[in-house]
Length: 149
Image (cartoon, rainbow, N blue to C red):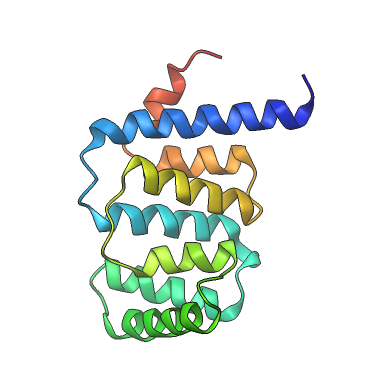
C-alpha cells in the first residue's frame, strides 16, 4: 500500500471514530460545540489566517464567551457577503472561519466530518486534526486511546 492510500485510510478511520463519538455525545443541537471545534482548527492554523480572518475568529471567540456580540455580527455579515459575491465558493480557511461565526448548526457526525475535511484542505496534518479533536470533542481522546491500530 502506498503513502497516499495509508493517509486516506487513516483519515477515514479518524472521521469514522469522530462519527461514533458524536453519535452518543448529544451535541447535535449545540451550535457552540461546532463553533468551538472550528475555532480550535483556526487556532491550530495560526499564521495561515490573514488579518481579517484572525479578526473574525477573535470576534467569534468574544461572541461565544458572551463578552461581545457586535464584532461577531459585523464579521458574520462580511463573510455572508463574500459567500454571495463568490457564489458560495470560499477557501477552506474561510469556511472554518464562517463555521466559528454561525450559530445555527449543532455538532453532528456530518458537521464534524465537514470541519475535519476543511481543516485538512486548509493544510493541517492528520496529527494536528486529531490533537484538535482530542481537545475539543468530549470523548474523542478516550475513544482514540482505545482504537485498535
